Length: 169
Length: 233
Image 1 (cartoon, rainbow over the protein chains, first blue to last red):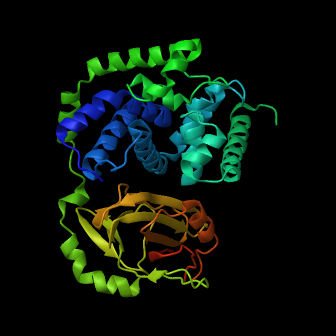
Image 2 (image 1 turned 180 degrees about the vertical axis):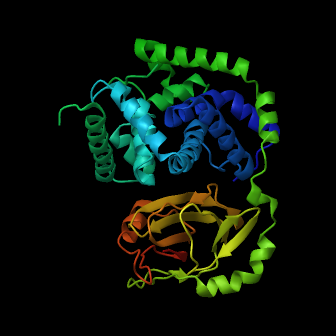
Image 3 (image 1 turned 60 degrees about the horizontal axis):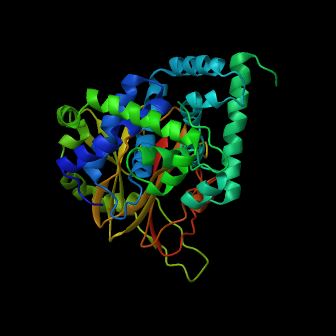
């Protein structure tokens, strides 16, 4: 890992700060938490440096930010379990059908209930917009594993949506 | 605005990278695709407005003024050094595998687990008791430059990857603090070091179902495995 100077950190922020903040907002559904997660993401960059062979800075920053956001969600859900569930129900109720593109709004909330591998795959698919084949190439997981993880997410999403909206089974 | 990816469109992430000045290879497509072009334009406009409100210097000053994490106020490596040997002896770790080509080294001292207690860190050896709400930090001392994979396995057989990536030789603290949930049972932390990249998915699969075992069994080629088993009654 290569150390990052203050000037380099500023340049990274100027170039990618908005996108990282936007990603955090998508995962946390809170402006305040997203701003905090953005700071935490860049603090980690400052503390641990950049990978020596960094080829896609944004993809790497998105990965760090996702870790920060899911850690934050885990803490938040333990502290405010009811609030988190209420938020999810309210968000799901806004989704017209389980097939809606609006599902991005609740991806972070639902993914926070899964293991790290599913989270990573879910973020790559639902937020980064990668196909299953592209995810398999990027992560090294088999296409079958990627498909299983996404199916698991999908089943959970549909079940939660039906519960929240009273929609058809 | 969300990007609806068409069959010939690049991933959303590539468009976002392009909007930031990277991923030049998607430029020709963006120029010819109304949907992608609109998305890039929107993201650029939003970014520009956002930057004006939050200039880098302001942001860096905010970072400077953030309180230092309480745990990091302590120089605790010396504190742990004294118990390092004990930790190595008590850490429950293991494996060894039938494949004679594998060179799994068994060590307990590479991984250290510490509980945050007020403004101090309490080193936790295998067998130590923890409870829901306890927050721990993980540290690892790599023997060389290589690849580290760290996971948590709990009594419900849930396995979570806590770190995965290249590391340099020497001590490092893993980025995230971990707070225990209320599920009872053992809490394993397993660190695997290798000079070459590890197959995290395979390791996750191997760990499932082993939480109640006194010794973990893993097959990871030429690697160094260290683990700490805590108890959450």
